[in-house]
Image 1 (cartoon, rainbow, N blue to C red):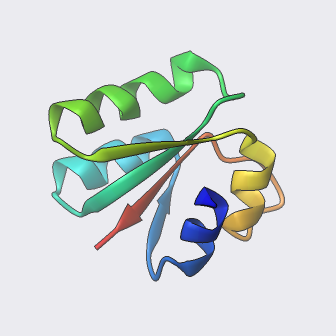
Image 2: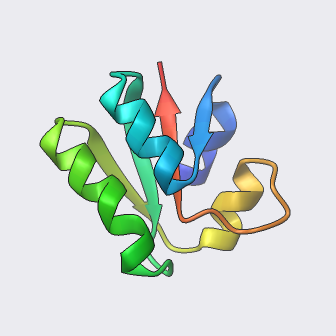
Length: 82
């Protein structure tokens, strides 16, 4: 379900640092976080999203999340932007 959101999104931001920047810029509608990713990597994006009222969704696999973004590697955090 959430993987489809990424496929259908017109614009996405991939990665924790880029997601945090985009949230601060007011560009993010929702973030998706892979449950199997290291919490040290995902926590900054989750915390920033919570502080800014951005919806947080979870998916099971960072590999599948990466594939949904068209990557051949995993993605821990993906932001769906406006």
